[in-house]
Length: 326
Image (cartoon, rainbow, N blue to C red):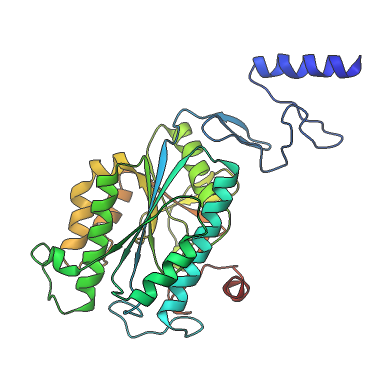
């Protein structure tokens, strides 16, 4: 009899838009097989204890991921060395492996959301391509590997063609154009020197839909918690995402997730980012952050494997040595 009454009570609460919490056991009888911090349903509802439920009105239709890689350049426009002082290809391969892990983790939980992955590579090496294909074969969908020749934009970028920064900006422009052409609902632009946490894709997508549904605005989401955010006093807001806190930003780097709508609404800013060697490079992207909501996670979901002293590099309070070994 108690079980029958319990089922009726659960159904009545759900009809009224509520879920039940058993305070004695701290369990969730109306959410079968759900554990704390994993109570949400993609494109339906976002539940954060004790903040309650957010109905998802900003549903995610598809995710495009665009990664630009170049094993020939260690750090563009710099003479600094990266942490661990390894060959550039090692950083790229570890970055791709961590990306495959986070994509597969997301796909296992949410197989119905379409993901497209494109690599734009300037390495110009069959051996490198073979290594890439070996890693990408662990995915259950086909990926695109586009060999990129910076000649494609020789007449569009106002820089010396022979400088490394020309190749950097030309590949970035290629990424933006591919992202616009693919027309995925959300697009995640990634550089080749980030290590990603297993939950990175899941948390970025589910945080996007939660916060966008609350604020009725499109977003720009950065996967890394950069050191520069803590070097001087600034105004920020702290928001509750799907699994952790996020802080608002007034500047970003070139690895970020946004919507196709933002990409189209601010297309001139994306193009101007690549037209010249701006100071900083992200000058025109930062202008978008003055008008739209940009956020980054606390703690970090991705680690930028730059120089150990870089203000744009390793996130605070992250065991980078352990993550590198894994």
